[in-house]
Length: 196
Image (cartoon, rainbow, N blue to C red; front, side, top):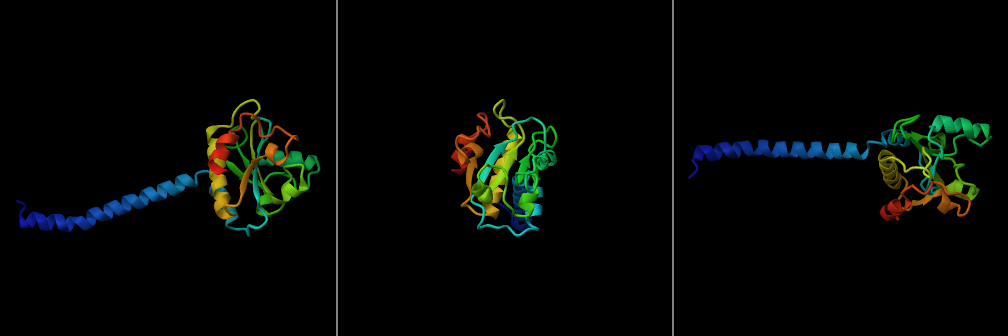
């Protein structure tokens, strides 16, 4: 039989133990939230400062760079040399660890300014498609796990920020017969299984 003193002592400690549980749960939620934002921190910061044209965007179109090297600045220079209107053709570039961090998401000016892409041959698709380029040649090798994790986190964020109506497509799906982009080793089936 428990003494009255022991009972009162355990009751007095109950709020402290409940508080400890609540603090631990709060810490777990914060850790989970920061884990969900591991790759999209810069995207979220930039997007918080702009007015998203939610009605405009219909697609997220995935590309590969078809080269091992490069980052947003490199591709911007190349696209400007090719006289592409507004430079970098993509809204986002996901690094592979060569010229930018592996899984690092760079935000292009097309996203910041909410203007059309230059990433597919169809002007109509560029008007409504958010261009996402993963650095690498996925005809030769698969993207890294971090690149795919970053891509999934970006897709999840865009669907939350722009709308669930956003459809995922590859460049080849958006423009059949024109290209093999984003390459045979890009995990398109897996991404469609997750996102439709």
